[in-house]
Amino acid sequence: MCGIAIAADTPPQTAIPRSEIKRQLHGMWVNGVYGCDVLNYYLFDYTDQHPESVRFLGGDDVATVDGFVEYLASKSPIIVKDEDGNKACLVFFHGAVLTPWGQEIVFLVDRKKDGYLSAFGERASVNEYLDPWKKGGFKYSKAVGITLKSRPDFIQAHERLLVPLNDEDYNRLKDTVLKRK
Image 1 (cartoon, rainbow, N blue to C red):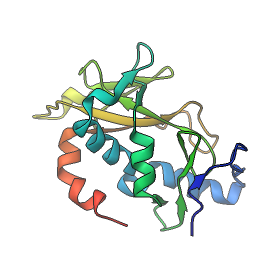
Image 2 (cartoon, rainbow, N blue to C red):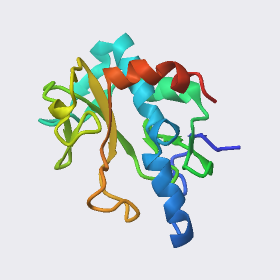
Image 3 (cartoon, rainbow, N blue to C red):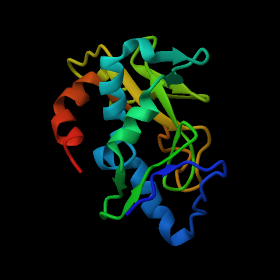
């Protein structure tokens, strides 16, 4: 089983990805609702219930969400999978959520409602289109996302590091995602 909460003052051991497992780790980040993206569903749900908990850290969409990590810990273990079904757990350490390879996951909440999320110099559409407004009939009232402070070497420069979720996709998939184990 996964070791989830780490209470010691020493940071958890981080995985140094070997080349043969980099594909698995890549899949755990980008694998739709079974990868780290599952955090978006919890983030969306939590910020709907506790909108006052969101605090922005700067001019982009990076946010701290008071009480959210504790809420996630109550849902643990949070298991993520790649497209081949390989599993790993997210780690909770000193108020942060870490990927299976040891990077801190950063939470985003759309503050401009312009169809994009931005963080650390990256800007990404809140849907699958490069220009979100090109999707016929697209409208949204809320979007959240996750990202990392730095790009792991197994995620190429042309690939999206910022993973968004808008209310249309949340409503379509929430029952499936939030009830899985």
